[in-house]
Image (cartoon, rainbow over the protein chains, first blue to last red):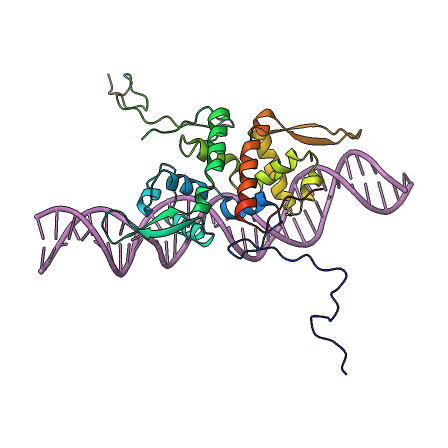
Length: 135
Length: 135
DNA sequence: TCTTTTTACTTGCATTTTGCAAGCATTTAG
DNA sequence: CTAAATGCTTGCAAAATGCAAGTAAAAAGA
């Protein structure tokens, strides 16, 4: 009988390589740290602002685009697709009767509310030139 | 007498340009939104991981460098300087008797604890491959 | 109905940021 | 005194960002 030479040996190896962990979208994790994983999804200058707008009830491309920070449209497109890929947002028929589509948060996306609130509170307390706009 | 043509007119103009708001470090704000301001300080893949390490009590360049995510050393240098510039961290003499310096969070930096906790909780709940390492 | 405007992107390109590897001066350990 | 560790800096390729312009489909207006 030939010797076992295939990738998987009959006996499980003593020292196993650390299995590469992946997030829900299938991307490799930098580490098992939940914070690092969260940053791989949302860790940039724009993503959480789009999520903020979604929390405000904005749902259309033009709405996000009209926010005062002025996100470039190509970035906006990429971020919306990423939010969908990671299951934080989904596309739904627009509620204004037209046949256009809008975006809305999923439960996973809405679960970020405490994160946004904590960031807002920190900004208001430690960066006194900031304020929440009432519109 | 020549007509007034310089930038500043004698009478203050009725409709004033919106004063450019700045954060504590003197950078222009993208908007008055506290979240947007917070993201201008911490909105990238690495900064909050360094702050996490500082919360873990790590204080030395080599400690941050040794974290499992593997931050590049040039990025680490830039981020540490930025944390200092924005008043989230400060340099202090190392506590190990040597004449090296270490970093530690200021009150402003420690105030980010609720943000990190909320992000950690979100990651643990919605990205099940993540976990907190107990070391 | 025909034209115009709005919406939701896409494309091209210059600039900036990131990531990797190597180098280097100072400090510490042996 | 020598070797290793520390805390960076530098150079460069690759990726992300930002800006402006372009485009196709849908909606609004004449």
